[in-house]
Length: 105
Image (cartoon, rainbow, N blue to C red; front, side, top):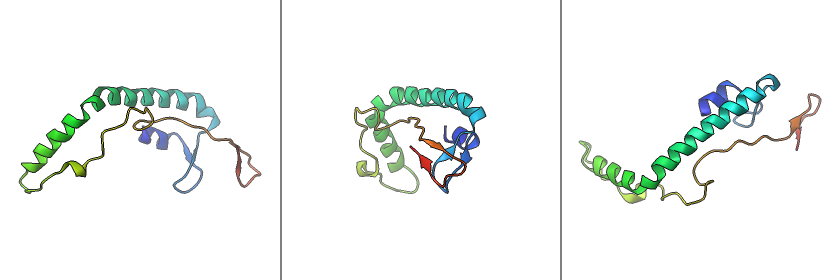
């Protein structure tokens, strides 16, 4: 999703917002909605098993040749039930005028 976003938008500010060219708007939003739906599907499939995946990773890393001991505190807490805790969304902000130095909202 990030790669698609970077390839199909133009930089507006250093490490900041990006611009969607007008000619690409409908194609971009349709593709991004599809990618967001894919991510949401993966989250719905895998996040109910979050604690089990953490336990498997702890067991794997604890048995590794490096001798490292993984601990539960090394991992983020289980995601909340809030849809915004994990996932993506798409927001568009204002419009920029060519003569203006800033965007209106």
